[in-house]
Length: 167
Image (cartoon, rainbow, N blue to C red):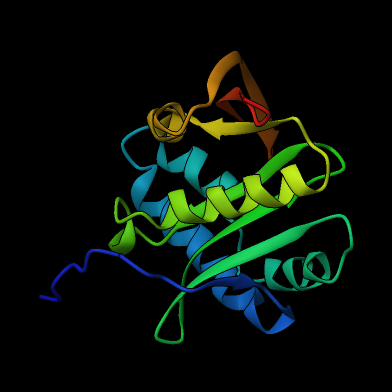
């Protein structure tokens, strides 16, 4: 069994197109394991990207609308976050299960928030999975409202959250 490491200084950097496959894998494993206690297998299957999503992620990585950051551990992408500063939204934040609760999500989100502030955002919002609500609350986000999304014909419950950046 591999020993869990506490993350102290984890390199965070901008993703590039070569990171698309690893980003898809991070999202798949996070949904498959970390959301398993909150979402049904049917909901997880609808929400989780299939391997064909790599092309869409690769295209999104080249789009100017998004800033995509990755956290790296010795050449392995262990988490990623997506900021749409123009919309004032965190569009994604996922960490591989092995590295959950080690500070990676906090570090990624902090970098996204700093980028948003530099871009002139005074607040950020995020549509958050039910299992991620406690994390977002611990880093200063407040619940705005419950919401749902229909993905591949399956309705999933989420929570819209918001954080003021100028305080």
